[in-house]
Image 1 (cartoon, rainbow, N blue to C red):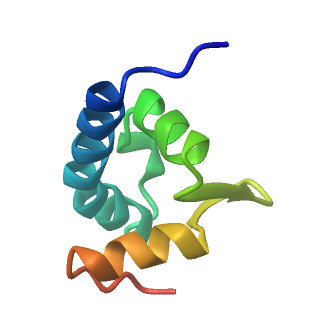
Image 2 (cartoon, rainbow, N blue to C red; image 1 turned 180 degrees about the vertical axis):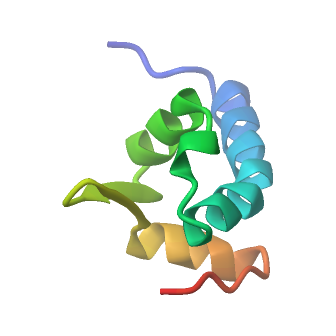
Length: 75
């Protein structure tokens, strides 16, 4: 499998960074049904989120990204 070009990966990461605040808000309100399934798949694929017992949660990497952009998600 060939990796996508660097520009495409950067654009994807920027898009996901922009989607992270609203995604976390939906998770905190227990409304994961409002998150686009494709966005969830992308977060899981880049290891920012994981499924744990049927619940979507941030990984250590996801929490670090939140810290980088100034978000403080509830644990």
